[in-house]
Image (cartoon, rainbow, N blue to C red; front, side, top):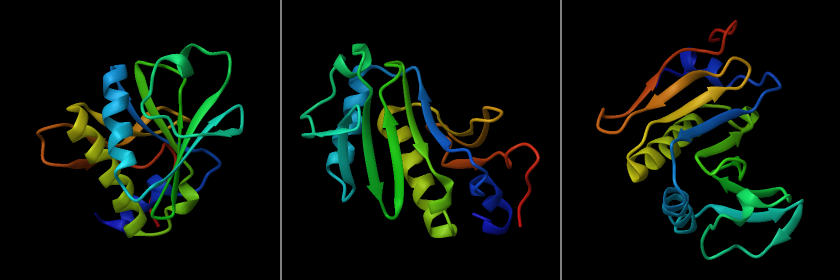
Length: 156
C-alpha cells in the first residue's frame, strides 16, 4: 500500500464508503456473520435504534420487515454499519474519518479480502457519490487492487 497515494480513497468528504458484495444469498450472509462472531469485533444488533440481543444467525425477517435493522461492527477503531436492505447485496457503510493512516486502511482491506475469500465473490469499496470502485478484491487474484481516488480527489 502506498498511503500517500491511496489516502484519497479515505479522505473525509461527507460520504460514507461502502464495502459491497453483490449476488449474495442468505447462506452467504450467515457465513460472514459467523466469521464476525468469532473475531474480536464488538457487535451490536439494532431494530429501529433499539438494542436487541445478537441473533444466533441471520434469517430473512430483517429484509422483509417494515422495521430498520442494523448490525454495528466495531473493529480496530473502525465502525462498520451493516444494513439489511437487500438480501442479494451485502453492504457495509464505513465512515472514512476513522481511517487516519495506513494501519486502519490495511484493516479495511483485510476485512474486504476475508469477506471475498469466505464467500468466493468480488468485493468492492465504493464511493457513493459516483458508485465508482476505489478498491476491488477478486477471488483467486492474489489480493486487493487500488483503482484510484473518488472523482475529483487526489492523494496528499
